[in-house]
Image 1: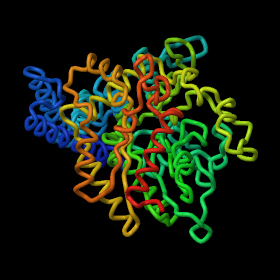
Image 2: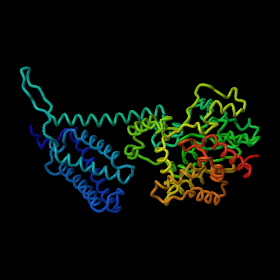
Image 3: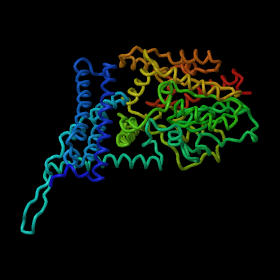
Image 4: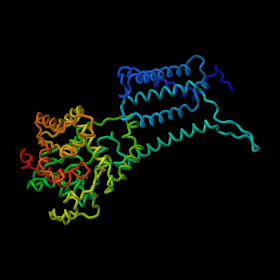
Length: 538
């Protein structure tokens, strides 16, 4: 039945037309903005040159034009609601956005706000074309049978329903994983753009969790219970760091325990949570370390990744849904696969570094050793033989995985262009200012490729970049000296250890990037001397 043009359309139809018009207008404007942006950048995707750029600009211009034509069809003279408001347009828009997101996650990584804006503009153009096409052909037909007329869905209708069902399932599954991760935090579901507090609490161990027979304290830190200021009888130095501080060895072998044995009358309180970065250190300084009122504060800065990651918490709606490192449906299978994958030699399972603190030799979760610990390191070495003898260590990663991680770090901190230094120094400036009258110092922990010559040579052979091995320490030591911040570079002390017969110093876990017991000993002894020399420990 034809719609009488003189009769006002139903109120629901008016609302639907207004919403559709607003959507089309927003898409058209977005496409115009994307076109202007593409024209200004000329290399919008970092990989499009020549004809590729013009193809993209043509597609964006077409999207903007289609948006205008769709609006004209909807609101122009003689437009009729029944003809210009296609049924199911909301469903079609949902499917277009979902499929566009899948395509972006598959082909346009890493995430960039520029490229995601282009993708959204192209989705808007596709939707405008759908509106211009109007109402599709009927998706069902009536068939007469002995029992009466029945409706039989045509293939096109079944395909549309199936496509919508798949898209809805993906979105619901992603939302479900996000809700689960919010209610029960897990490193497996922690996105890279998680808020500062969310990331800290996700990776903080629960109080009392046993690590090689030693329980974490009430704050989830790998140390003895902290004492309030009024109950202390010794000078207290607070150390702040990531997985190096969180501990990858039995506690008596950890560098903070080594320091306390070297410094009679000095207490080292270890504030460490794995997978942290500079902005998390700053937050923990303000909320946990400073209220603890220590006599001095030392930040353990890992050269391998603290220069490039977590300098600021970025993100937004687009990055939350279009960055592989934030989409839980991508993160979860990838991290589970890394956890289950075995090294090439089949000696031990690997642990994804992004999924939490690696524990290459396994942990004793049943026996609390603190009750009968008498300071006998030899007895502890017999209990954990891999800690006493590095030749018994099992690899955390396969050799190829380890080299891939190390190559990425070497290129990011030793390459010709490193962008993280200004951001890192800004965080360190804020931390120093927040400490006020409490002495603040920095310890630079080198990556293994800076200590082991054979590893460095292998990375040089694999890299196409020009790498400067000592660049991070050279720049940071000079910058911190200008600011009057005491700094200890551990690199000379680690390199001073004589290589063994195979040419390696064996100060890091096998195929890992964390200190083993030998590395912790060398680092702890150097840190103890540093505290005395700088007057931070009495």
